[in-house]
Image (tube, rainbow over all chains, first blue to last red):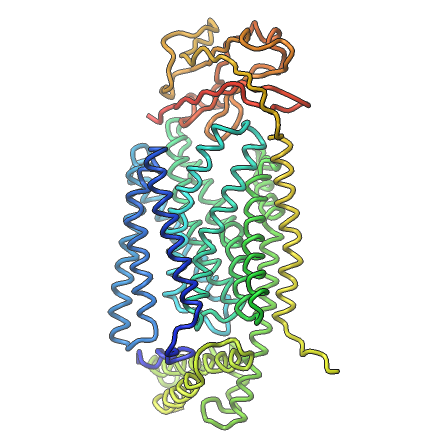
Length: 459
Length: 163
């Protein structure tokens, strides 16, 4: 049955790799150089705790890089080879996560909060973050992104991006603390540092997916999904870091649990979609828009605009949150929600507006392509199927019908067929817009496989 | 002449550019805030003398022990400033900032002569807490101009350990 879900858009790969792979290599090289230089500088000149973790963190970054490379190689391969690659990539990414958590626990918090507290903090953040990822992936109702890419985006946010900013922000803070007048000026400087470094570190992941995984990066909707996934990863590790840190600070006074619990609520419940997920979704949305622009100049402007928006949104929260103080009374509970709504709400609303527009446009385009495919009489999409394929609820209803009448195998066979049909429509859409660099044979191959899936499934 | 076909991606692109104006305004406001509190050209070259940072006894309002840069959470601490080291025609203050950049102790603002009777600047315990919060504390002597501190004349950083 696994072969029925193996069909993805734009198979086979083009013979000559497009120039964007070269750009991706340059971006990766810059990231690696920044990480290595920053960690060494931190270690030599600061010798702070993050400075020491920098050198250990390099191993985690190396594992993530290797895991991502193998994960990407696993794409578009024979199912057996792909499974083997995915297992290797999964093990490496898992090791990297564990190693990084270990580094944080051992060198930053464990000595005061203890590994037990760190483990509890991580455990309570898992369900909320998993819920966030589930919701974000479901947003793309026409063509859901593969879990492996969503999880790679999440892992980048949690491990690589956090590693990069720990070092960068340590350096910035060390310099600012010695040069600037403490107060609002220093606060603004710190907010600039957080906005700039964190959004760049997170956004690079979406940019790389855009450059390397073009087949799975279709439009503004996909950009929002990948961006939000990176943001959720960053938020996950930041939540654990803040919770354990505040626990260790306040536990001698008997209020460590409250402090950690408050952080959990503000970051994993209230700020789950409002904070980092929104900021990086803005970057992702802009990269998704750039994906469908034809002029190189407009593409660059769109990507830069997205980064600028994300940096401004992040900066405004960090710099001006102090102007909305929270009272330590019942009213404070209302104030904390209002503060998030007022300060981050407009940016989240923008993401939602872009998402809804993108979904509407994508839905219309796929519907049109399906009608064209059906009219051509290739057999890949039949005229009566168009109405069902264009509606996610009807697709689900048809699968459930297959499940109740013919069992679980029929359910998955139909799911594979529907996915392949949607991929074909997506391929047609990109080809019609002249925004695809795979050869026309890829579309023929995809169509042939859809017909084969239909034959095997007996629909 | 035929009009170009409507492309929704261009609408999304234009929406992005419109919101970019908001982004630029936000960042410009941030830069203005930074420049207001960190005005360029304020370096006078003056240096204040911080005699040291010591353990502090609030009952006698006196410091004791050696000058240190590390304290435990249960130890109260205070900085001692030699206000006479500064010219009399400037406005200054002294402040302690904790790890969260909150002010946890201060004297001034005033002229060095007005502050001469307050050489000891202690850290106040946080409300409802029994101990100092751990982390890095920064002590600064600042020169004021136009109602805001504009230059750091002396700076000391001490660490309050977690355990």
